[in-house]
Length: 468
Image (cartoon, rainbow, N blue to C red; front, side):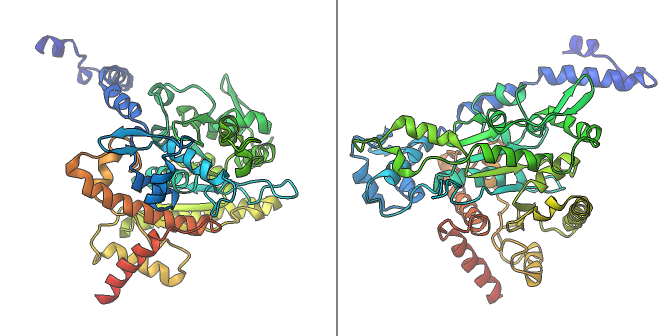
């Protein structure tokens, strides 16, 4: 050990600007020697490895468990994996079950809530684009976005596009199937999607066609969920946007890119198209339909408000602001809202198209509140609701050990398979996550059937408050 220490350069012996250069080089060498790959590989190797019981699968599909038990005896349905006396199913199995149920002749309920072409060829619903954005770090922004994307897949079968607008690529860690896909990723990212070409420290605006944009999405281990990778190269976007200011409306290049992608990738498939002429489930049609379009796009932001992040806010139909409710944290929220409003007013004056920005519902999502009902943080939620119940979600994300356990490994609660001693806490946390997501569905995707999780949460927490 002493020999190793003797070989380490003593930065304190250096003077002047050279000390910073030496520190940066030495620290980078030190980082290369850290065993970061162990945790990363363990996490990605367990991606969507969790298997669900018949009862759990039935809850996702919103059917009776006994009914599902009978269905899985059919050779057509996924048989899952045998574990002791029970069969357990993957997220891919559950999506396939959903498609099979939806495509059956005489299906009595809607199992697949896809956007489909109407009689005029246009989609039956518009494409929601949801930005999870906050100027403050540590508000559970990324995990909330990841949970929402996976909830929409598990409970409604939606095809979800996840855009990682963070140079740190945090949400990419929740969806990438291979370790190198995140830390060593060199493929298309948000900068490319917006049409900013960066070469030799020069920027050009080269908007891509809808077909070109579609090729930028990467498949994930989640069926129907595709990822626009995060990358350190996103940092180039802000410089590029400044340099192309005379060539394009730099506040809406992301909005324009989403519009071009949407026009070129409209839905074509309905549930009945998943059967062949003989009534058999058509696996090729099913796999093709999973990739033909998206039913919603979710954008996860970095904790700042750069010009790139403003672009992603303006590209959204719905703005969700994850926010902790402590007094000092709320001052950051006020600054964030004021800045967004200033950008919007300025761009609206210059561009009539911007008057239609943000056509959906917008709200603050309270996060990381203590589970106890008598807490000062919750009083802020109630006071905001007095100014308008639509301003803030009446369902919040609890802070608990069960939250941090899966998050430590960049896994969602829907993937996390806890040890026996942690199962009770994980179950309670999943109930909380389901309630938050159910409440967001009501605000963002009003045409989808609610699942009742939010109602149970509100009944419990607001009745407790009234009793006090």
